[in-house]
Image 1 (spheres, rainbow, N blue to C red):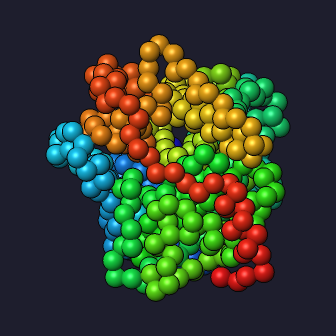
Image 2 (cartoon, rainbow, N blue to C red):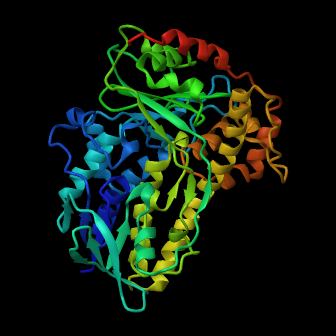
Amino acid sequence: MPTAVIVGGSVAGLASALALSGIGYRVLVLERAAPPPQWSVAEAAGRWRRPTVPQGIHSHTLTSLGVRVLRERAPQVLAGARAAGAPTLDLTGTVPAGATDGAREPGDEELVALGCRRSSLELILYRAVCALPGVTVRHDSAVGGLELDPGQHRVRAVVTAAGTRVPADVVVDATGRQALSRTWLRIAGVPVADDRTSPSGLSGYTRFYRLIAAELPGPLGRGNAAGDIWDHYAGVLHPGDNDTFSIALATLPGDRSMAGLRSRAGFTAVARATPGLGPWLEDGVSEPISPVHAITSPPNTLRGTATSHQRPVAGLFPVGDAACVTNPLFGRGMSLALDHAFRLADVLAVHQDIDTTQRRAVARMTQELFLPWYEQSTAADRVRVARWRAAVNGTPLPPVPDAGSGLPTAEEVASAARVDGVVWRGLTRMLMTLATPAEVFGDDKFVARVRQAGGPAARREGPTRGHLLRLLAEAQGAVV
Protein backbone atom coordinates (compact mmCIF):
# COMPACT_ATOMS: atom_id res chain seq x y z
CA MET A 1 0.00 0.00 0.00
CA PRO A 2 1.61 3.32 -1.07
CA THR A 3 1.94 6.12 1.47
CA ALA A 4 0.91 9.74 0.85
CA VAL A 5 2.12 12.51 3.13
CA ILE A 6 -0.12 15.55 2.84
CA VAL A 7 1.38 18.77 4.13
CA GLY A 8 -1.44 21.02 5.31
CA GLY A 9 -4.73 20.09 6.90
CA SER A 10 -7.11 22.68 5.51
CA VAL A 11 -9.78 22.16 2.83
CA ALA A 12 -7.44 21.09 0.01
CA GLY A 13 -5.35 18.85 2.25
CA LEU A 14 -8.31 17.18 3.90
CA ALA A 15 -10.05 16.63 0.56
CA SER A 16 -6.83 15.08 -0.77
CA ALA A 17 -6.71 12.76 2.24
CA LEU A 18 -10.28 11.69 1.58
CA ALA A 19 -9.63 11.18 -2.13
CA LEU A 20 -6.32 9.30 -1.82
CA SER A 21 -7.64 7.08 0.94
CA GLY A 22 -10.41 6.11 -1.46
CA ILE A 23 -7.92 4.72 -4.00
CA GLY A 24 -5.96 2.67 -1.49
CA TYR A 25 -3.30 5.02 -0.14
CA ARG A 26 -2.17 5.06 3.47
CA VAL A 27 -2.38 8.76 4.34
CA LEU A 28 -0.57 10.93 6.87
CA VAL A 29 -1.64 14.58 7.15
CA LEU A 30 0.93 16.90 8.73
CA GLU A 31 -0.71 20.09 9.99
CA ARG A 32 1.33 22.77 11.74
CA ALA A 33 -1.63 24.15 13.72
CA ALA A 34 -3.25 22.72 16.84
CA PRO A 35 -6.32 20.44 16.59
CA PRO A 36 -9.73 22.07 16.19
CA PRO A 37 -12.05 22.30 19.19
CA GLN A 38 -14.23 19.33 20.03
CA TRP A 39 -17.43 21.36 20.33
CA SER A 40 -20.40 21.08 18.01
CA VAL A 41 -20.06 22.66 14.58
CA ALA A 42 -22.35 25.51 15.58
CA GLU A 43 -20.23 26.29 18.66
CA ALA A 44 -16.83 25.80 17.07
CA ALA A 45 -17.29 27.57 13.74
CA GLY A 46 -17.08 31.08 15.11
CA ARG A 47 -14.46 30.34 17.77
CA TRP A 48 -11.93 28.18 15.90
CA ARG A 49 -8.79 30.28 15.58
CA ARG A 50 -6.71 29.46 12.47
CA PRO A 51 -3.66 31.77 12.35
CA THR A 52 -2.24 29.58 9.57
CA VAL A 53 -5.36 30.17 7.45
CA PRO A 54 -5.96 33.94 7.59
CA GLN A 55 -8.65 33.81 4.92
CA GLY A 56 -10.61 31.28 6.97
CA ILE A 57 -12.36 34.00 8.96
CA HIS A 58 -13.61 35.71 5.81
CA SER A 59 -16.70 35.27 3.68
CA HIS A 60 -16.87 32.02 1.68
CA THR A 61 -19.40 30.13 -0.39
CA LEU A 62 -19.54 26.70 -2.00
CA THR A 63 -20.53 26.93 -5.65
CA SER A 64 -22.45 24.35 -7.64
CA LEU A 65 -19.19 22.63 -8.60
CA GLY A 66 -18.31 22.10 -4.94
CA VAL A 67 -21.77 20.75 -4.18
CA ARG A 68 -21.50 18.34 -7.11
CA VAL A 69 -18.08 17.10 -5.97
CA LEU A 70 -19.37 16.44 -2.46
CA ARG A 71 -22.55 14.81 -3.70
CA GLU A 72 -20.66 12.45 -6.03
CA ARG A 73 -17.39 11.93 -4.14
CA ALA A 74 -18.02 12.64 -0.46
CA PRO A 75 -21.73 12.34 0.25
CA GLN A 76 -21.05 11.87 3.96
CA VAL A 77 -19.52 15.37 4.08
CA LEU A 78 -22.47 16.94 2.27
CA ALA A 79 -24.89 15.10 4.56
CA GLY A 80 -22.88 16.26 7.57
CA ALA A 81 -23.03 19.86 6.41
CA ARG A 82 -26.77 19.71 5.94
CA ALA A 83 -27.22 18.07 9.34
CA ALA A 84 -25.11 20.84 10.86
CA GLY A 85 -27.49 23.50 9.54
CA ALA A 86 -26.06 24.37 6.11
CA PRO A 87 -28.92 25.12 3.69
CA THR A 88 -28.98 24.02 0.07
CA LEU A 89 -29.72 27.06 -2.05
CA ASP A 90 -31.73 26.57 -5.26
CA LEU A 91 -30.37 29.13 -7.69
CA THR A 92 -33.16 28.67 -10.21
CA GLY A 93 -35.45 30.60 -7.90
CA THR A 94 -33.68 33.74 -9.08
CA VAL A 95 -34.37 33.41 -12.80
CA PRO A 96 -35.49 37.00 -13.59
CA ALA A 97 -39.24 37.43 -13.59
CA GLY A 98 -40.55 37.64 -17.12
CA ALA A 99 -37.38 36.21 -18.67
CA THR A 100 -37.81 34.01 -21.72
CA ASP A 101 -37.29 30.26 -21.12
CA GLY A 102 -37.77 30.80 -17.41
CA ALA A 103 -39.47 27.44 -16.75
CA ARG A 104 -37.44 24.71 -15.10
CA GLU A 105 -35.30 22.68 -17.53
CA PRO A 106 -33.18 19.50 -17.42
CA GLY A 107 -29.85 20.32 -15.81
CA ASP A 108 -31.33 22.90 -13.47
CA GLU A 109 -30.96 20.43 -10.60
CA GLU A 110 -27.22 21.15 -10.69
CA LEU A 111 -27.76 24.86 -10.08
CA VAL A 112 -27.52 24.75 -6.32
CA ALA A 113 -25.09 26.16 -3.76
CA LEU A 114 -24.37 25.43 -0.11
CA GLY A 115 -24.72 28.09 2.55
CA CYS A 116 -21.87 27.24 4.89
CA ARG A 117 -19.11 29.09 6.69
CA ARG A 118 -15.65 27.90 5.71
CA SER A 119 -14.82 26.97 9.30
CA SER A 120 -17.97 24.84 9.52
CA LEU A 121 -17.30 22.97 6.28
CA GLU A 122 -13.66 22.47 7.18
CA LEU A 123 -14.56 21.06 10.58
CA ILE A 124 -17.07 18.63 9.06
CA LEU A 125 -14.48 17.56 6.49
CA TYR A 126 -11.85 17.17 9.21
CA ARG A 127 -14.02 14.88 11.29
CA ALA A 128 -14.91 12.78 8.24
CA VAL A 129 -11.22 12.35 7.41
CA CYS A 130 -10.25 11.47 10.97
CA ALA A 131 -12.84 8.69 10.96
CA LEU A 132 -11.25 6.98 7.95
CA PRO A 133 -9.18 3.82 8.49
CA GLY A 134 -5.62 4.23 7.27
CA VAL A 135 -5.61 8.01 7.70
CA THR A 136 -3.66 9.80 10.44
CA VAL A 137 -3.72 13.53 11.14
CA ARG A 138 -0.71 14.79 13.08
CA HIS A 139 -0.90 18.33 14.45
CA ASP A 140 1.84 20.78 15.46
CA SER A 141 3.95 19.33 12.63
CA ALA A 142 5.60 21.74 10.21
CA VAL A 143 7.59 20.51 7.20
CA GLY A 144 10.96 22.05 6.40
CA GLY A 145 11.99 20.23 3.25
CA LEU A 146 11.97 17.26 0.91
CA GLU A 147 14.30 14.34 0.49
CA LEU A 148 14.70 13.35 -3.15
CA ASP A 149 16.43 10.41 -4.79
CA PRO A 150 20.06 10.98 -5.93
CA GLY A 151 18.94 12.00 -9.42
CA GLN A 152 16.35 14.49 -8.03
CA HIS A 153 13.64 12.77 -10.04
CA ARG A 154 11.41 11.44 -7.25
CA VAL A 155 10.43 12.20 -3.66
CA ARG A 156 11.50 9.82 -0.93
CA ALA A 157 10.45 11.61 2.24
CA VAL A 158 9.60 14.89 3.88
CA VAL A 159 11.74 16.32 6.65
CA THR A 160 9.91 18.11 9.45
CA ALA A 161 11.04 21.41 10.92
CA ALA A 162 12.26 19.38 13.92
CA GLY A 163 14.47 17.29 11.63
CA THR A 164 12.39 14.11 11.59
CA ARG A 165 12.44 12.12 8.36
CA VAL A 166 8.98 10.90 7.26
CA PRO A 167 9.12 8.43 4.33
CA ALA A 168 6.61 9.02 1.54
CA ASP A 169 5.78 7.62 -1.87
CA VAL A 170 3.72 10.70 -2.65
CA VAL A 171 3.88 14.20 -1.15
CA VAL A 172 0.93 16.54 -1.56
CA ASP A 173 1.60 20.24 -1.03
CA ALA A 174 -1.58 21.60 0.54
CA THR A 175 0.11 24.58 2.19
CA GLY A 176 -2.23 27.06 0.52
CA ARG A 177 -1.03 30.38 -0.77
CA GLN A 178 2.45 29.80 0.65
CA ALA A 179 2.98 26.94 -1.84
CA LEU A 180 5.91 25.70 0.21
CA SER A 181 6.92 23.03 -2.30
CA ARG A 182 8.54 25.83 -4.29
CA THR A 183 10.88 26.47 -1.36
CA TRP A 184 11.45 22.75 -0.78
CA LEU A 185 12.47 22.28 -4.40
CA ARG A 186 14.89 25.20 -4.31
CA ILE A 187 16.50 23.87 -1.13
CA ALA A 188 16.86 20.49 -2.84
CA GLY A 189 18.58 22.13 -5.81
CA VAL A 190 15.73 21.72 -8.31
CA PRO A 191 15.06 24.72 -10.60
CA VAL A 192 11.58 26.15 -10.01
CA ALA A 193 9.35 27.20 -12.91
CA ASP A 194 8.08 30.77 -12.94
CA ASP A 195 4.56 31.54 -11.79
CA ARG A 196 1.96 33.40 -13.82
CA THR A 197 0.65 36.32 -11.77
CA SER A 198 -1.63 39.32 -12.11
CA PRO A 199 -2.93 41.72 -9.46
CA SER A 200 -6.26 40.95 -7.82
CA GLY A 201 -6.48 44.56 -6.64
CA LEU A 202 -8.59 43.81 -3.59
CA SER A 203 -8.70 44.63 0.09
CA GLY A 204 -11.55 42.91 1.88
CA TYR A 205 -13.52 43.44 5.10
CA THR A 206 -15.82 40.74 6.47
CA ARG A 207 -18.25 40.57 9.36
CA PHE A 208 -20.51 37.70 10.41
CA TYR A 209 -24.09 37.97 11.66
CA ARG A 210 -26.84 35.74 13.01
CA LEU A 211 -30.42 36.08 11.82
CA ILE A 212 -33.01 36.77 14.48
CA ALA A 213 -35.98 37.19 12.16
CA ALA A 214 -38.00 34.10 11.26
CA GLU A 215 -37.77 34.76 7.50
CA LEU A 216 -35.11 36.03 5.13
CA PRO A 217 -35.32 39.83 5.14
CA GLY A 218 -34.51 40.19 1.47
CA PRO A 219 -33.95 38.25 -1.74
CA LEU A 220 -30.74 36.51 -2.69
CA GLY A 221 -30.49 38.06 -6.12
CA ARG A 222 -27.92 35.55 -7.34
CA GLY A 223 -29.42 32.63 -5.46
CA ASN A 224 -26.47 32.29 -3.13
CA ALA A 225 -25.72 35.97 -2.53
CA ALA A 226 -27.09 39.48 -2.29
CA GLY A 227 -25.34 42.68 -3.31
CA ASP A 228 -23.02 43.17 -6.24
CA ILE A 229 -19.72 44.51 -7.56
CA TRP A 230 -20.28 48.22 -8.10
CA ASP A 231 -18.28 50.84 -9.99
CA HIS A 232 -15.90 51.64 -7.09
CA TYR A 233 -16.35 48.91 -4.45
CA ALA A 234 -18.06 45.59 -3.82
CA GLY A 235 -20.62 44.63 -1.22
CA VAL A 236 -21.77 41.01 -1.12
CA LEU A 237 -23.73 38.93 1.41
CA HIS A 238 -23.53 35.12 1.63
CA PRO A 239 -25.85 32.98 3.79
CA GLY A 240 -24.12 30.49 6.09
CA ASP A 241 -25.00 27.58 8.31
CA ASN A 242 -27.09 27.81 11.47
CA ASP A 243 -28.90 31.02 10.49
CA THR A 244 -25.68 32.95 9.99
CA PHE A 245 -24.58 35.13 7.12
CA SER A 246 -21.49 37.11 6.21
CA ILE A 247 -21.08 40.47 4.55
CA ALA A 248 -17.91 41.23 2.62
CA LEU A 249 -16.99 44.74 1.49
CA ALA A 250 -14.06 45.21 -0.88
CA THR A 251 -12.04 48.18 -2.05
CA LEU A 252 -8.77 48.90 -3.82
CA PRO A 253 -5.68 48.19 -1.71
CA GLY A 254 -4.19 51.38 -0.35
CA ASP A 255 -7.46 53.32 -0.57
CA ARG A 256 -6.97 55.19 2.70
CA SER A 257 -10.24 57.06 2.35
CA MET A 258 -12.07 53.75 2.86
CA ALA A 259 -9.95 52.62 5.81
CA GLY A 260 -12.91 53.40 8.09
CA LEU A 261 -14.39 50.07 6.97
CA ARG A 262 -12.15 48.48 9.60
CA SER A 263 -14.34 50.01 12.30
CA ARG A 264 -17.64 48.41 13.21
CA ALA A 265 -19.52 51.67 12.78
CA GLY A 266 -17.98 52.43 9.39
CA PHE A 267 -18.54 48.89 8.13
CA THR A 268 -22.16 48.96 9.26
CA ALA A 269 -22.85 52.33 7.66
CA VAL A 270 -21.52 51.24 4.26
CA ALA A 271 -23.16 47.81 4.41
CA ARG A 272 -26.54 49.37 5.19
CA ALA A 273 -26.14 51.73 2.23
CA THR A 274 -25.33 48.90 -0.19
CA PRO A 275 -28.33 47.82 -2.30
CA GLY A 276 -29.62 44.44 -1.25
CA LEU A 277 -27.83 44.39 2.12
CA GLY A 278 -29.61 47.05 4.17
CA PRO A 279 -32.73 45.01 5.10
CA TRP A 280 -30.54 42.26 6.58
CA LEU A 281 -29.08 44.71 9.11
CA GLU A 282 -32.28 46.27 10.39
CA ASP A 283 -32.92 46.20 14.13
CA GLY A 284 -34.55 42.96 15.18
CA VAL A 285 -33.48 41.19 11.98
CA SER A 286 -29.90 40.19 12.79
CA GLU A 287 -27.10 40.65 15.30
CA PRO A 288 -23.33 40.77 14.70
CA ILE A 289 -21.37 37.77 15.99
CA SER A 290 -17.85 38.81 14.98
CA PRO A 291 -15.62 41.84 14.70
CA VAL A 292 -14.68 43.24 11.31
CA HIS A 293 -11.92 41.13 9.76
CA ALA A 294 -9.61 42.79 7.23
CA ILE A 295 -7.38 41.17 4.61
CA THR A 296 -5.56 42.14 1.42
CA SER A 297 -5.92 39.47 -1.20
CA PRO A 298 -2.81 38.06 -2.90
CA PRO A 299 -2.44 38.34 -6.67
CA ASN A 300 -4.03 35.87 -9.02
CA THR A 301 -1.36 33.19 -9.34
CA LEU A 302 -0.96 30.03 -11.38
CA ARG A 303 2.02 28.23 -9.87
CA GLY A 304 4.63 27.09 -12.37
CA THR A 305 5.43 24.15 -10.08
CA ALA A 306 1.91 22.80 -10.59
CA THR A 307 1.96 22.91 -14.39
CA SER A 308 3.83 21.26 -17.24
CA HIS A 309 6.42 24.08 -17.13
CA GLN A 310 8.01 22.51 -14.06
CA ARG A 311 10.74 19.91 -14.48
CA PRO A 312 8.86 16.88 -13.16
CA VAL A 313 9.68 15.46 -9.75
CA ALA A 314 7.72 12.24 -9.42
CA GLY A 315 5.41 12.02 -6.45
CA LEU A 316 5.17 15.76 -5.66
CA PHE A 317 1.79 17.38 -6.25
CA PRO A 318 0.58 20.89 -5.27
CA VAL A 319 -3.20 21.08 -4.73
CA GLY A 320 -5.74 23.85 -4.22
CA ASP A 321 -4.28 27.28 -3.51
CA ALA A 322 -0.76 25.80 -3.65
CA ALA A 323 -1.47 25.27 -7.36
CA CYS A 324 -3.61 28.31 -8.22
CA VAL A 325 -5.08 31.34 -6.45
CA THR A 326 -7.80 33.49 -7.99
CA ASN A 327 -9.64 36.53 -6.70
CA PRO A 328 -11.91 35.51 -3.79
CA LEU A 329 -14.65 37.81 -5.10
CA PHE A 330 -15.58 34.96 -7.43
CA GLY A 331 -16.06 32.54 -4.51
CA ARG A 332 -14.73 29.48 -6.31
CA GLY A 333 -11.62 28.64 -4.26
CA MET A 334 -13.09 25.90 -2.05
CA SER A 335 -14.96 24.30 -4.93
CA LEU A 336 -11.87 24.16 -7.13
CA ALA A 337 -9.81 22.75 -4.25
CA LEU A 338 -12.31 19.94 -3.73
CA ASP A 339 -12.46 19.18 -7.45
CA HIS A 340 -8.67 19.26 -7.78
CA ALA A 341 -8.16 16.81 -4.92
CA PHE A 342 -10.44 14.19 -6.41
CA ARG A 343 -9.09 14.73 -9.93
CA LEU A 344 -5.62 14.11 -8.52
CA ALA A 345 -6.80 10.79 -7.10
CA ASP A 346 -8.35 9.89 -10.46
CA VAL A 347 -5.07 10.44 -12.29
CA LEU A 348 -3.09 8.47 -9.70
CA ALA A 349 -5.58 5.62 -9.97
CA VAL A 350 -5.03 5.43 -13.74
CA HIS A 351 -1.25 6.05 -13.69
CA GLN A 352 -0.33 3.88 -10.74
CA ASP A 353 3.44 3.91 -11.24
CA ILE A 354 4.92 6.83 -9.32
CA ASP A 355 7.13 8.23 -12.06
CA THR A 356 7.53 11.27 -14.27
CA THR A 357 4.79 10.03 -16.61
CA GLN A 358 2.35 10.17 -13.72
CA ARG A 359 3.66 13.59 -12.67
CA ARG A 360 3.21 14.98 -16.19
CA ALA A 361 -0.35 13.64 -16.34
CA VAL A 362 -1.19 15.41 -13.09
CA ALA A 363 0.41 18.63 -14.37
CA ARG A 364 -1.74 18.51 -17.53
CA MET A 365 -4.88 17.92 -15.48
CA THR A 366 -4.01 20.77 -13.13
CA GLN A 367 -3.39 23.18 -15.98
CA GLU A 368 -6.64 22.21 -17.72
CA LEU A 369 -8.58 22.74 -14.50
CA PHE A 370 -7.12 26.05 -13.33
CA LEU A 371 -5.95 27.93 -16.42
CA PRO A 372 -9.47 28.99 -17.58
CA TRP A 373 -10.27 30.40 -14.15
CA TYR A 374 -6.91 32.12 -13.79
CA GLU A 375 -7.39 33.80 -17.18
CA GLN A 376 -11.01 34.77 -16.43
CA SER A 377 -10.06 36.27 -13.09
CA THR A 378 -7.12 38.13 -14.60
CA ALA A 379 -9.24 39.66 -17.36
CA ALA A 380 -12.13 40.58 -15.06
CA ASP A 381 -9.82 42.09 -12.44
CA ARG A 382 -8.04 44.18 -15.04
CA VAL A 383 -11.33 45.83 -16.06
CA ARG A 384 -12.62 46.20 -12.48
CA VAL A 385 -9.39 47.63 -11.09
CA ALA A 386 -9.21 50.20 -13.90
CA ARG A 387 -12.76 51.32 -13.16
CA TRP A 388 -12.28 51.44 -9.41
CA ARG A 389 -9.06 53.39 -9.85
CA ALA A 390 -10.83 55.89 -12.11
CA ALA A 391 -13.49 56.37 -9.42
CA VAL A 392 -10.88 56.87 -6.71
CA ASN A 393 -8.86 59.31 -8.81
CA GLY A 394 -11.87 61.14 -10.25
CA THR A 395 -10.87 60.40 -13.84
CA PRO A 396 -13.11 59.26 -16.72
CA LEU A 397 -14.11 55.62 -16.81
CA PRO A 398 -11.93 53.59 -19.17
CA PRO A 399 -13.63 52.05 -22.22
CA VAL A 400 -14.71 48.41 -22.03
CA PRO A 401 -12.02 46.33 -23.78
CA ASP A 402 -12.99 44.75 -27.08
CA ALA A 403 -13.73 41.10 -26.41
CA GLY A 404 -12.36 40.17 -29.85
CA SER A 405 -13.56 37.46 -32.23
CA GLY A 406 -17.06 38.88 -32.14
CA LEU A 407 -17.73 37.63 -28.61
CA PRO A 408 -20.03 39.68 -26.35
CA THR A 409 -18.58 41.59 -23.44
CA ALA A 410 -19.26 40.61 -19.85
CA GLU A 411 -21.57 43.61 -19.55
CA GLU A 412 -23.59 42.52 -22.58
CA VAL A 413 -23.95 39.00 -21.19
CA ALA A 414 -25.00 40.24 -17.76
CA SER A 415 -27.55 42.55 -19.36
CA ALA A 416 -28.99 39.79 -21.56
CA ALA A 417 -29.20 37.44 -18.58
CA ARG A 418 -31.76 39.79 -17.00
CA VAL A 419 -34.24 39.10 -19.80
CA ASP A 420 -33.25 35.74 -21.30
CA GLY A 421 -33.38 32.48 -19.34
CA VAL A 422 -30.95 30.69 -21.69
CA VAL A 423 -28.33 33.39 -21.19
CA TRP A 424 -29.05 33.42 -17.46
CA ARG A 425 -28.38 29.68 -17.23
CA GLY A 426 -25.15 29.92 -19.19
CA LEU A 427 -23.87 32.80 -17.11
CA THR A 428 -24.92 31.13 -13.86
CA ARG A 429 -23.22 27.86 -14.80
CA MET A 430 -20.04 29.80 -15.41
CA LEU A 431 -20.31 31.79 -12.17
CA MET A 432 -20.99 28.56 -10.28
CA THR A 433 -17.87 26.94 -11.85
CA LEU A 434 -19.84 24.25 -13.71
CA ALA A 435 -18.71 25.45 -17.13
CA THR A 436 -15.62 27.36 -18.19
CA PRO A 437 -15.88 30.83 -19.74
CA ALA A 438 -14.85 29.37 -23.12
CA GLU A 439 -17.56 26.72 -22.94
CA VAL A 440 -20.23 29.35 -22.25
CA PHE A 441 -19.09 32.41 -24.20
CA GLY A 442 -17.81 30.35 -27.13
CA ASP A 443 -21.16 28.67 -27.80
CA ASP A 444 -22.73 30.08 -30.97
CA LYS A 445 -26.30 29.64 -29.71
CA PHE A 446 -25.45 31.43 -26.48
CA VAL A 447 -23.87 34.34 -28.34
CA ALA A 448 -26.90 34.59 -30.64
CA ARG A 449 -29.24 34.81 -27.64
CA VAL A 450 -27.11 37.57 -26.15
CA ARG A 451 -27.32 39.51 -29.41
CA GLN A 452 -31.08 38.97 -29.67
CA ALA A 453 -31.63 40.33 -26.17
CA GLY A 454 -31.11 43.83 -27.50
CA GLY A 455 -29.92 46.85 -25.54
CA PRO A 456 -28.84 46.97 -21.92
CA ALA A 457 -31.42 46.05 -19.31
CA ALA A 458 -31.86 48.27 -16.29
CA ARG A 459 -29.36 47.65 -13.49
CA ARG A 460 -29.64 49.03 -10.00
CA GLU A 461 -26.92 51.56 -9.24
CA GLY A 462 -24.90 51.53 -6.05
CA PRO A 463 -24.14 54.54 -3.83
CA THR A 464 -21.59 57.02 -5.09
CA ARG A 465 -18.11 57.11 -3.65
CA GLY A 466 -18.79 60.57 -2.24
CA HIS A 467 -21.83 59.26 -0.39
CA LEU A 468 -19.87 56.39 1.16
CA LEU A 469 -17.07 58.71 2.24
CA ARG A 470 -19.62 60.94 3.97
CA LEU A 471 -21.10 57.90 5.73
CA LEU A 472 -17.65 56.83 6.92
CA ALA A 473 -16.90 60.33 8.18
CA GLU A 474 -20.19 60.44 10.10
CA ALA A 475 -19.47 57.02 11.60
CA GLN A 476 -16.24 58.13 13.24
CA GLY A 477 -16.55 57.86 17.01
CA ALA A 478 -19.74 55.74 16.84
CA VAL A 479 -19.90 52.15 18.13
CA VAL A 480 -22.17 49.56 16.46
